[in-house]
Image (cartoon, rainbow, N blue to C red; front, side, top):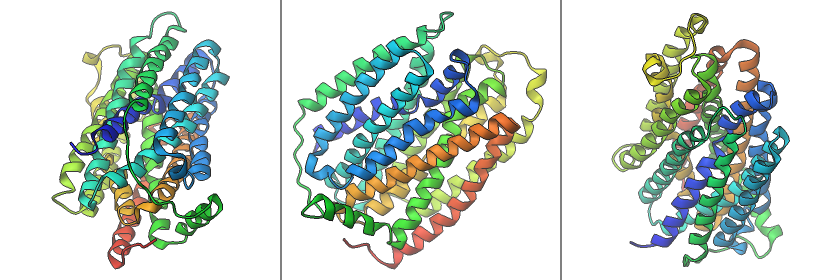
Length: 409
């Protein structure tokens, strides 16, 4: 298979970082229960993860082709390896912040490299969209694995969960070694003759109307996705009254739904309009919230703690299925814009995607966390209907602009 070493490296790195990056919801719940911080304090972990992603992406996106995508991914893996070790031996809420800061810095390097490499190793828009969706789908498989892996280390000893980071260090080391000995050959044109020229050319992307609408759309989507993903374990624990372990395990449904949705999207985009697919998915996602949330208000007070799957109510299975429908949105939006740009601009454009995605994740999680603490989890999730409505309008604009003209460097 053509470019097989590159593709395996991309999948493996994305799998490892799916576990690390999206363990934030699990660690937020653990921080509340073990380190005794409030919901609003714990929500800061999202910022410690996402702001480094945004800052690093801004600083290195244009420079990355010069540094080398393989070197960038190896650097990211090394940074997060030591971040995990510090978490084990630090074991305080302060060290969770350091951990997610290292994850944010590293993921920026990984994602910039991956998004840029996808453009290099694909030859058409449909191939680009298909590979983007399948890689993002595999990312969701990693998230599902996280929801299995972390509870495996839960016990009466409140510190036993930290042993999961030894396993993660092993996976990071495996990924590092595979990448180190993989032969990755490619040629990419830098967009300027110096870092200063690279940054100027990248900044010009911000004033392109299609790019501007797109980054707003990426911001809105990640606000929705992270608002649900980060707070679902805590939502399960507080609203459905699941035990701590079951709350995390039930979040597997959401992650697997995201994975399935993105794999299916990779197939469907070869046969139908991406716009139609995205709009239908957003509408169904909003419908699920409007059906489920009204039935949860005040019901949890009459329930006892649920510790097994046999006691989980039907709504506990329906709500995380929203992942099936929000899943296709992000990779399809990304692919639409990236495949419209010359390959020399894929790295800086990826930087913009990551920056605004990170900001959307931080703001969305922070808002849901504040609302969770002040008005309760069921009411907090109603907020997500607002970015859903705005996202529908953005998708129509992107479709109209992308048909008007092909972006040029």
